[in-house]
Every structure is written in structure tokens, then in C-alpha cells.
Image (tube, rainbow, N blue to C red; front, top):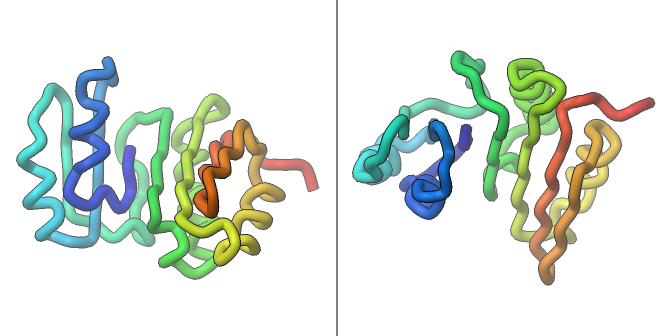
Length: 137
């Protein structure tokens, strides 16, 4: 599941890597129209605001690339809590951020709230791979 999937670039890039399914949503009907050109077995797109998203299908991986910071802090936490509840204990979320400096407070909060399976820093970019089980404390 990819939230704020834009024009489906990620779906296009990973479609040959053996995923069973891919679902993407984006608030922009124009972006989803472009994304719909991505073809493949069990690839779906829909127009929807991620803040109001409620999981309605099975998935085990959530990807939010360059978009989580558009939501207020309470909505970020609520969205991730809903996603992790739907995924179960094996669920994983990948959060990509273009500026670890600009979003340092958000990164710190997420690291305290969820188990960090991996943190990758490339220059100023940061990728958090978070687990579903809530962090202690």
C-alpha cells in the first residue's frame, strides 16, 4: 500500500519484482489518472486523501514517500496507528523524507513511538523502516 502515490512511479518501478499486489492512493485525480497507465496484475489506484484513509484490504507494507509531513502530528500518528493495526505485528512502514534536518522532530517522535527496523541516511535524506509493535514508553 502506497499513500500519496502520485503518478504511480513506484508501482511502475517495482512491478516486475514479484509483489502479489499493489494499491496506491493519492488526493490528486490528475495524478491517479496518470498512474492508471501502469498496468499489471493486481495493481490498483484510487483518489483519496490519506488523512481520512481507513484500511479496507490486506497489506503488509505501507510506503509514504515525501508526504507524511503534510499532515498535522496527531493525524500522522493516527494514520500510522490505523495502518499498523490493519497490518498486524509483522507489518512494516517505510517513511521517506527529503530532509532529516527539517523533519528532525518528526523523525525523533516516530523513532520513539514505533520500533525502528532500519534507518537509512543518504546525505540529508532519511528513510525510516518502522515496525508495527508500539515502542515501549
